[in-house]
Amino acid sequence: MEFLKEWDKEYVWHPFTQMAEYVKHEPIIIEKGEGCWLYDTNGNRYLDAVSSIWCNVHGHNVKELNDVLIEQIGKVAHSTLLGLSNVPAVKLAKKLVEITPEGLNHVFYADNGSTAMEVALKMAYQYWQLKGKKKRTKFIKLGDAYHGDTIGSVSIGGIDLFHSMYKELMFETFKVPSPFPYRFNGTQEECKNHSLSVMEGILKEKGDEIAAVIMEPIVQGAAGIIVHPEGFLKGVRELCDRYGVLLICDEVATGFGKTGKMFACELEEVVPDIMAVSKGLTAGYMPLSATITTDKVYQAFWGGDYGSDKTFFHGHTFTGNPLACAVALENIDLFEKKNWPEFLIEKIDFLNSRLKELTELPHVGDIRNKGFMVGIELVKNKKTKEPFSWKDDVGRRISKRIVEKGVFTRPLGPVLVMMPPLAITEEEIGFMIDKYKEAIIEEFDI
Ligand SMILES: *Cc1c(COP(=O)(O)O)cnc(C)c1O
Image 1 (tube, helix red, strand yellow):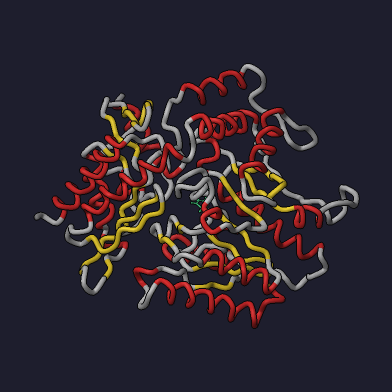
Image 2 (spheres, rainbow, N blue to C red; image 1 turned 90 degrees about the vertical axis):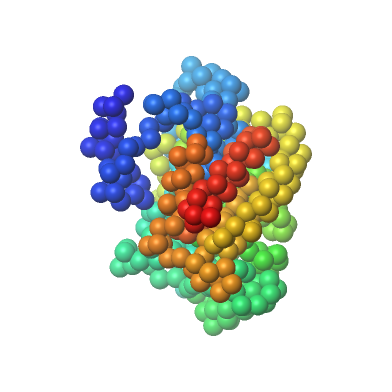
């Protein structure tokens, strides 16, 4: 199998990776998965602590999910939604309407989170054009936002390291500081109100130019698992209503149980005008996304000929792929069969109680989590909260130690991440926490 490692270094250009550095280390090549574990070509196993970048739900190699894929592939692997429909895509659309917040009634498919957000952007933009409000062309986003890597989603992103290189290609947006309690000088309530008042200021001044506010509800994942103060999402919904702009919620990371609710919006009983889901949609099995909207938005596109500007000119070759939709349906069924949400509640309590053991460790500045989304921020100085920069590389060094101990993780700068599959057992949660703890202690040599 040594040839695979050579070929990997020679031919594969890895995402978000400095290849000159990547090739210095022996690559880990995954060959199979079982439950919450991944196995490499050397026979080592790793607990999948970040659910294969936040998408795995019920574990790897799950019989029920495998079976529906095999069954579907015996029928048809792919056929188009352009002019045709297919059985799993129809059934899944109805199911998604049933499980998403009341009022989201129409499902537009794409194949990943970034394109789901592109769809959301174009949908919101065209909605106002069709409504005759031609000036409503701009978007409000949050600081440190992440919505994917296509140019539209980069434009609505706010992470300088990922996004500033492409600034000449981006369209203009209005940025509201992310309500980030750990880095805010004041209470949770003040932190929330500060961001809301900046948002209201923009809406007051430029409201008639704004098409939509875009946000990751409750938890901003790639920003470093920032958990918003309670009431922020609800506050944004109220501002959107007051100033007549649309609210787009990006549930690509938060959807499908990760926060302890099926969708994060449910935590504050908010219904967005447009909601995007992807990562957990297929239980992490296949690339698929959906952008789901209300009758109000859908109706604006109703009528006219094909050539008229009421048609939504967007679609991807693999939109509504039958294999992906079939496995997504079974994913949702499995939630029900496993007694959702009860099966998760005790595990979240257990995770929370074990996480407390890490707070006393040196350089652990902040531990924040909502459900199974956990960020552990390492700082130079716990008292002053002086941060490590991305260049200090502390998150990657510790994560490397964790991987060597048999737990796969990938940090966000100085923030260690845990976001295990919902199928993880308490024993595995214990193992995971132990390894993070050991790695932090070893890194700081205490
Ligand atoms: C991962 C992610 C995306 C992008 O999804 P891709 O499938 O990687 O394109 C968008 N929004 C959020 C919140 C994400 O976490």
